[in-house]
Image (cartoon, rainbow, N blue to C red):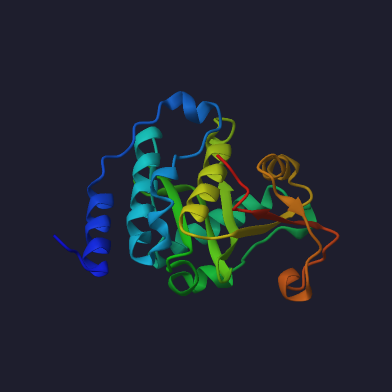
Amino acid sequence: MFHTVSNIKALLLALLIALPIFVVENTAFANNHAVPWSFCNAAAKDDAIAPAIKRNFLAHFNQHFSHLHFRDATPSDLPVLQPFINSVRNEFIAQGDKLDVVFDDDLARLDEVFRNNESALFVMTQDESKIVGSGGFARTAPREVELRKIYLDPSQRGTQLGKSWVRSLISLAKALGNKRMWLYNHRNLTRATDIYKKEGFKVFTPTADIAKGLNVDDYWFMELNLDDWVD
């Protein structure tokens, strides 16, 4: 029997969606392993499969961190998500620079910035509605993304969740076909910087359009070649 290219793609997509969720021992997360995306990297080159990959990503986290619920962020989350992000930021900045009201432009344009096949934004909730974490990445050039909105409530720190979250977001970005990931991180956030360095991020000197008016002496700008990154 001969199949057209479109029929083969449709069959592959159906198989991926129906594929049972891989069982990963909880000890894997304790050892800082990421969600295993190698099974679908090849298929990810077809943009039609990206939504199924993201669904599997969330399913894995909901299976292994059952005290939390992981899902896509939506515009309806903004009244809670933005204050949550501001509160976490305030933990790490000088007393005189506390942020009373800050509205992130990318959150205000959430659907535009994060709802495409190369990007994603997720939230973690507890007790159904309380946001206790966030994270994702946004396309900044073809096959290039910026890691964004990596925030955890104090109640979720010290559990290896943060390291697993970062590693799995990197793995997801690679599975979606991206080639480069970059970020900027305040130099006061030494623990986060150490995590990024351990994952292979290297410091680079940003151009003006990347720096976005930030004082580059206060931030580390870091990049990762996703082709070279191995879970």
